[in-house]
Image 1 (cartoon, rainbow, N blue to C red):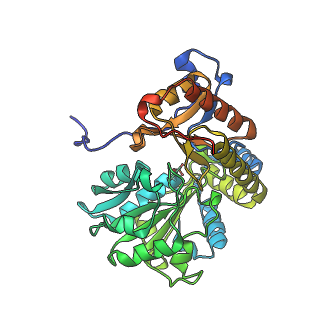
Image 2: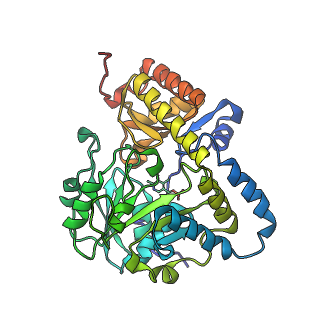
Image 3: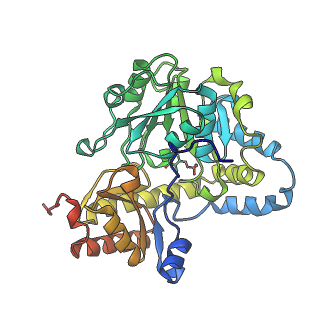
Length: 377
Ligand SMILES: *Cc1c(COP(=O)(O)O)cnc(C)c1O
């Protein structure tokens, strides 16, 4: 027998890891830096490392108290009811839960293009259809409500990524409010704030709760993760904040014990460690500014922990950079064959990325891709 017809489904293409690349090229892993997956260059919060170690001997028990404790801590952090916090196995797990809670077979979701591949993958697993709205390179990937509404046709869920991966653009709260207002009552607008900590913007939780001058809405949800600013990508921990009327749905859609004991304890410790998040954000802002100032190609302004660079032929440039020891993300799979995405690293990593990219561009690699020349004014 065979699995069901999966011909509409595509496999997720993750950023490439150091071990994988080093093995393939027959080189030593220590020769490489990886700036391809928007991971935290400082690693996890040291407090989270201690918590994981301390929790190891509890690994035989189901995570009941830890789950409740973390949910309560997050509810406190956002000033919402515990029932509004849906813990999940990574932000990706929360994407699944929101689809399980909304999609009937045949319902559609509306997703950004270019954009994060998992929205569409997850919708298809849940027997939903996928339609796209375009964020255009020519408009610097700007996200006014109108751009989404022009493509909107009654989809059940509309996905907004703010800050947007891979461009780093954001949608202001007033535009999000206008978008939610402009869609049907039965359409959920999900604001994916995986990179929220790096943006100088208030969270869209304000729209759910009716803060910052907005009326409370029951058709907006927010997605957050511990994978980026908190440096816990490896433990898989994320969550959604949902409208209060959705309280009962979680128990009906979640995979039992979705977030592990180790993940919950690590998350609780990381939440308390403001210093680590602040240091991470500070490093990111410096790296972002350096890359924008020093890269000899167009770099879009970004509110995430990465920048998008117009390099011409992204595959050629990413491959050559990798040969020279710097792994970046070729954005061809996002639908941007002219761009690479570079994660903000430590000062040292950032310098190495800038020097390597400039040298590669200086050697004429990528030229066939029709990059716009930047001239020093
Ligand atoms: C990284 C990321 C997520 C969530 O990733 P997890 O590791 O599953 O938490 C969600 N959305 C976007 C746009 C991301 O880049």
